Picture 1: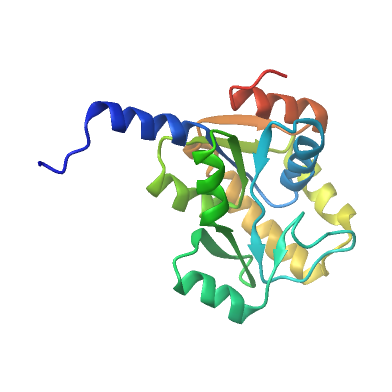
Picture 2: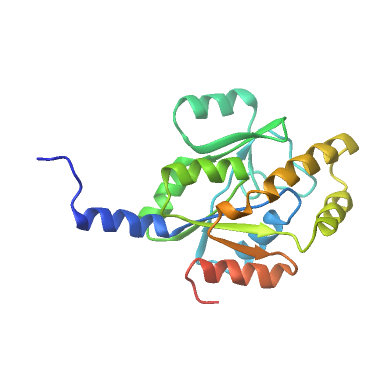
Amino acid sequence: MSGVPDAASTASSQDVLRRLTVLAGPTAVGKGTVSAFVRERYPQVWLSVSATTRPPRPGEVDGVHYRFVDDATFDAMVAAGEMLEWAVVHGRHRYGTPRGPVEQALREGRAALLEIDLQGARQVRATMPEARFVFLAPPSWDELVRRLVGRGTETEAERERRLTTAREELAAESEFDVTIVNDDVARASAALVREMGLAV
């Protein structure tokens, strides 16, 4: 045996990965809001729940918005190869995508959505280039700043860190397959689901 996959198995693998869509964009652009809207309105979409070492914000539910873990647990998941991707975000907390649930959803033939940061999207592209990569953009820089300040969940120092990161993230838009402007959550969510190849 040559060890080279035949055309049928390669095509099948690519078809599976095409059911994976990666959503990324700058901080405060509304990735979480769009993902929550998709979760509520489009039950045919399987949405990955990221693990993070940051504490929950008001209203966030463990296992729904994020899987909140301590540093030791996160370390153990990384060491065991259980993370599809992970990164330190804004120089402080770690975020990552548990590998098992994503692979299970794809094996089941479900349209899967990862809502992650830019570093994570780059890691997924390196291992799963056939996936669909969607950049969620703000209508303008001023609107992005307004959303971040209006959220009221970060200190001024944290906001400055996030805005610095956001400038870098916005510059990466060309790395993605398509851009969706989040000027309206319902419209952006519908556009995202269409990009996933699903009827709206």
